[in-house]
Image (cartoon, rainbow over all chains, first blue to last red; front, side, top):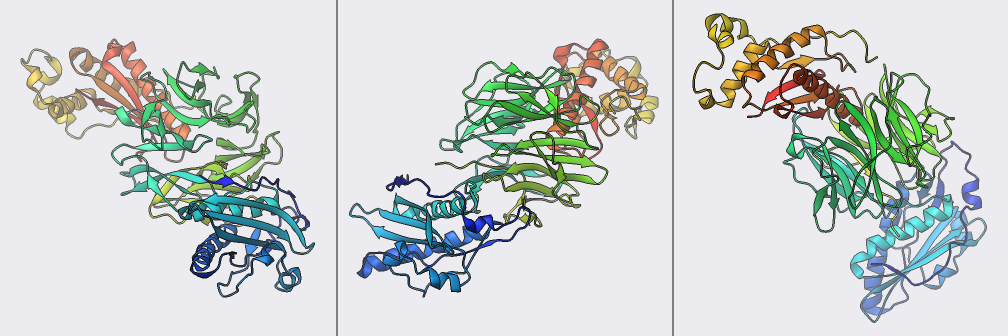
Length: 432
Length: 150
């Protein structure tokens, strides 16, 4: 575990650097990342510099995948002195074209662990924006680097970082139509991917609990779709509800205490809620239509869902106890798979129309609707913790599917490099 | 949308008519042929498909209502199931390939539920008929299939 040894609050949430960006223009802030240095000397110092260089490269890779920041390529030979960590030569970075700067150090401790310090500066103003330090085991350098990337991202954009987060998805192998599906979990940068279910049973819809150590998903065990809850550390799992019912579309409440899901009772598909620890489900919707795909608002007070009660699928919002249902979307086509953004402002959805399935956005108050992707067969939007990017699945005409990321600020979607076909992505929140 | 006129196609097994003519007793004297328990499940499935005029009914996109041609197939299925109370069937509903994940699961389940409820309406004991949904997990037209389990 990482322990913070500098209990310093972030000094700034938004800087003059990011304020120069106009909304909708993806002009990236250039950020310099000189190699992390070390106050240690001799052999020990060289070891620390080696770890520092690995961390530097990780920070660069982390920041390069964002739409808002553009890192300068760090140079290993560009030795950076320890005093310069807290007293940078800003003129040098100005002339290099950088608007922001990340410095840091790696120091050995007598107990065999390491101290990693991380500092973020506004180069134009010559001002420190944020600093944080971590005590880690040497093997945890990558996680410390992610934390440093997150510190820089948050200081410069005001949004939560996405680097020390996880992505769950369904890995697909085999011919289209006869696929073997397994749930995989990986770090959001693609490292440490592992399967958490065997391939013998068809699976869908993995959803992280806020602590990212528990996963709800849909299994076809017993030839019937049913929600199961899996503890990732122990591998133990249980059915969400003991009844022999068709259940699917699970999502955790923001505090992790409850799970909303869909259940079939006869021909009727309604939304239910149950304690994540188990218990008796409570029915939230009563329409004879198909009510499904519930997603909590980040404050836990509301739930957005899809229903075809009007004749075509549309988005609806209700209170978390099922009261005060009201329709949110009124456009042409079918609106489905809503996902509430972590900052509460937006709801992402899949819109199905004559031109296929596309990912779109609508504000939580029903205004500002727009289409983000071009399809033709996109589905399953999931928010980055920053609320600035959406992860979704895209299926091509041959039936092959993959995961893509798209920034709200505008850009072409980028495919996430994965060893297999993939679907049903779920991006976790930030774990402190 | 849901109330749209249905176009239903009964899947006629190629051999069904010929079989019925060659072996008229299959349809006329069921239950009197002795020792049906030794019949394998594959043979039972073939017999069920032949005498019902099909195991599958198809739906138009987003449709969940059973139309008249499908009702004829299901009536024949129900007649066979009433004669074979020892056989348990599972109705497997499929969603439409172009649909979204969750809605396809719900539509498949609703198609299966409609078929199950219709068979029960025709006198098949509810305990004899279970249901499931494959959503859009298996490609092809939206449909509901009656599968003999045992």
